[in-house]
Length: 51
Image (cartoon, rainbow, N blue to C red; front, side, top):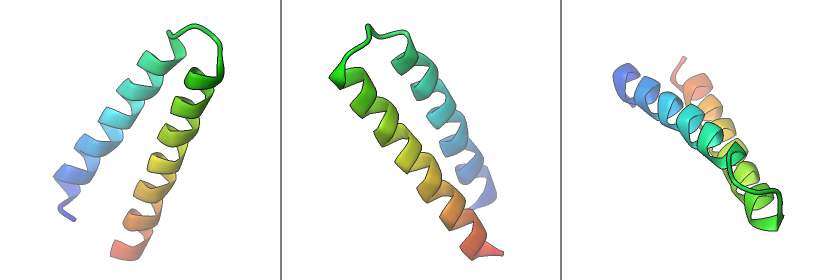
């Protein structure tokens, strides 16, 4: 993946997390935060494989 695209995805993940944290507490919010965390972990894995 191109470095610029990776940076854009990382920035999107940060924005998604900020938006999710503004949602009311509850199972849906928790699930969204877990999904975002998995997405960020996937990005980290992709970045490690590129090296």
